[in-house]
Amino acid sequence: MRIALAPAILALALVAAPAFAQQAKPQDKQEQDENNIVVVGAREVPPKEARRFVRQIGYSVDGQLARFAEPVCPLVAGLGPDAAKAIESRFRAVALDAGAKVGEAGCRPNVALMVAHDADDFVVALQKRFPGFFGSLSMINLRKALREGPVHAWSTIEVRDELGNAADSDEDGVKYVTMSQASRITLPTRQVTVKSIVVIDDQAVVGKSVVQIADYLAMRTLAGARPPRDGGNVDSIITLFDKDTSFTDPELTALDQGFLRGLYATRDDVSSIKQSGEIVRRIVKTAKDEVKAEKP
Image (cartoon, rainbow, N blue to C red; front, side, top):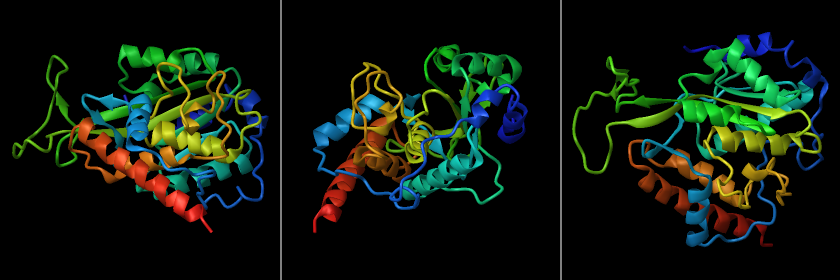
């Protein structure tokens, strides 16, 4: 069952009411221009490090990396109107920089950030009251979405054929697609993110800037990135809410920016191995470009 994000999020206002008074850390003068994406403390990244980074945070579905095909349209709930507007604006800027399509004002939301009082209880209530929010998540991914912690994130991903049509299911639930021609290079399918939702505990956003929150949202939704499974630290905004994280950067790192650019530049009809190779190249190039930009 699909569900329109905007009406349901508004209906959840009563559930998340205590969080609506929360305010994210205000932007400083440098951060106020949310369209100005500058990597702070840039350094060159060796290919080996870039490959390790992609393996640590990348998440493939049936051998492919998922991304949005339709224009992304963010909606933020649970924060004051100024903070919500700033996060949405920054998210759009990051998406454009990555090469993703971005919806115009008034578009139908397909990316949602909810800041809630007691996020653990909130997502449990959300699953009971609006199960459509969780789409067709497998039991494994549903358990991950409901797992206790400061952040809960999940995405609805569709298998589509080379024409962009969603795969059909037979009586046993097996997905199948229409193929016009076979190829050893390209695949007949692509994994498309349809909607993505992130819920953050209101206590976790205290002390975080709207830029940090927006950039974290971008990595979790646009890239489908996940914090390292081994709990190891990586130079990425994706660890912003991790326990014992040492991440202090004010925004996306060169690794993050390169990952996003690479994902939306690579073909969507090839294997995750080929996609990852393009992402690694973009990470290395992005880091080099940032280092050059910092030199007087």
